[in-house]
Image 1: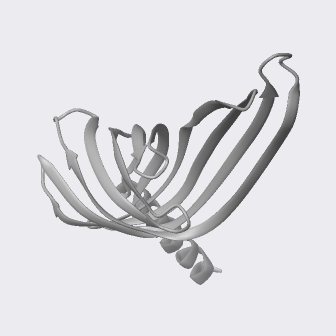
Image 2: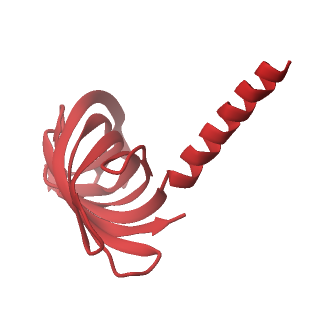
Length: 179
């Protein structure tokens, strides 16, 4: 019985020491996608598993991009939508008091949707309307930097390339808040 108590105490102490060392951050940000050519909102988190390695899931929702044209008595509107779900690992090459510079790699799931609507310009009646959507998994490769201000938050910049059907460069900036 004493042995089980010692083992349980050792496991609890190990878990507690891991929790006290672990650093967790959340971050909102703004992203720009080079292929969709629009801005999006980012929400993510960062969990340090060691001094140099963190796991960083995030979600990016790009604002819909709408284009329209009148052709042969019909108005054609096409709206493109895109969102991404990412699971990255950051490796910090440098992480001192003022600057943290890291490389990133990870997995990406992108979902793109297109809405097509054709209306008669004279009557305003809808002639045709379609909604299509598809998703694909891909890879992320990139770099980033955190800039410490001595507060409980730090601005960051990140540049990554998404290797998938979207094949786009994504630039993100925002604030990482310590929890």
